[in-house]
Amino acid sequence: MATTSLEKAALGRSGLMVSRVCCGTGPIGHMPEVYGHGSTEELAYATVRAIFDGPSNFMDTSRNYGAGRSEERIGHVIRERGGVPDGFVLATKLDRDPATNRFDAAAMRRSLETSFAALGVDKVSLLHLHDPEYAADLDEVTKPGGGLSELYRIKAEGLCDAVGLAAGRVDVMMPILERFEFDAMITHNRFTLVNRNADAMIDYAAGKGIAVINAAPFAGGVFAKGSAASPRYVYQEASEAMLQPVRAVESICARYGVPPGAVALQFSTRDPRITSTICGVGRPEEVTGVAEWANWPIPAALWDEIAALPASSDDPEATRNYVAPS
Image (cartoon, rainbow, N blue to C red; front, side, top):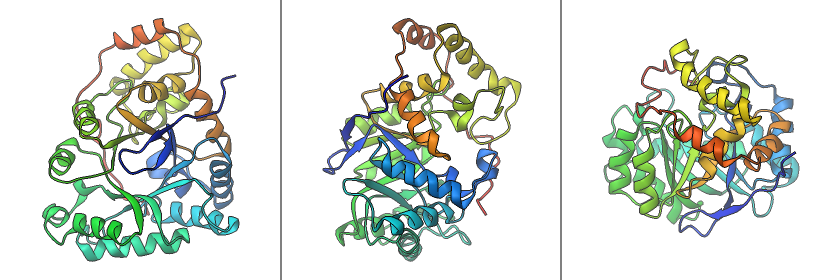
């Protein structure tokens, strides 16, 4: 069995040190429309306790994960423990107004205040502006006095230690990364064993000194659960054509006796440009499970075969039918 210890890395220039694997908490927010399964309160509480007691010191959440349930369930355990554990890096996000998709300063401030109330905190380590591609008007995000201005104001007020940009579409993220200063950024589903859509953006951000956080290395769970058990890709039911590249990876892993989840995770963690990799966890055993995968011995010959496989550079979510969490 692989060990469960995790290395730490500097989060850009922020002064924060974070585990190379971050625990994502979308699954504890009860989002069956995204993950194909739900979560009870008690299972969520047990998972958060396992995260706080586990090898990672880094947790990521969001106001819109399960319409607030993820933050509320994390907050339950934070209150139970009398606060966030010392040395733990808690990250959340400024989310658009769910009714209007507004990203103006007032909406960002409401998002922050609602997050703090749910989490039971008065500060977070890392705060991202989240999903600007869904803005009713992208100018609300970038104009003076808009969403990003409010993000920087929040940092200046000492309510977070570091700020980031978390989104999906590369064509939306790149102009923002080029114009504004961030400590960190999150890309998801776009740098995996079968997709390299974000590769050039990762190169740019790392070169600029922005900490790159790569989320969803399992492509929505298929590399963690297997294409036979979970024929879904990037949070949607997958066609045979979509699963074919996944099965090519699975075939290689089977010949070497290595879990595809370990290969999918280490594809991200072994990249020197990437500071931390977010793995969504929905059960206590998954917390130590991903840490074991992060340390799983993988032969060089397997990596050679993986490198020889073709990978798409298309946006993997271009055909996704997005359903807002409810």
